[in-house]
Length: 200
Image (cartoon, rainbow, N blue to C red; front, side, top):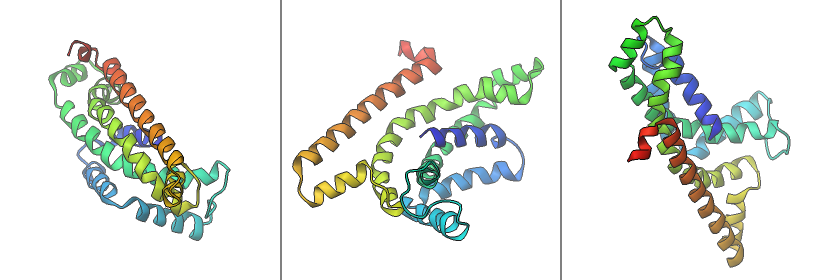
């Protein structure tokens, strides 16, 4: 999730709302990532960076390098959804009067984007993050299988196959607790970014 947010903020601030080929291509690239099956994206990353370029381990690995490809496989798909939400709102915010007023006062373009536009544009993405947490939990099963890693998703699949009810119940309870905590964090973050939400 953190990686997806870093990619979203970076690409949005640098390219959104500009009249160039990169700005026009950004939205299409995000749609492309959002529609890709996660296992297919993971397989492509594995083939290119682990098998062809040999930059990362092919299967498993407890080192930091072994976590890069699984993390990117999950983050890029999430970025497809998250980036579209933030990009659309960011582009709309750039046309608002308070942005024009800030520019007229001599504020630099990067400052306007980071301090004013991004704060307002991030709200849809923050709200969407609660749903993304649930998607992460479901998508992680396929990513773990592709990269040969053992995680919560793999434990659930194995327990379901062997009809291990206590383990299945435990994993479901942990997942539900994570979703509740994620929803609480999202609500608090929205109120922090936009204090007006406290009055709603």
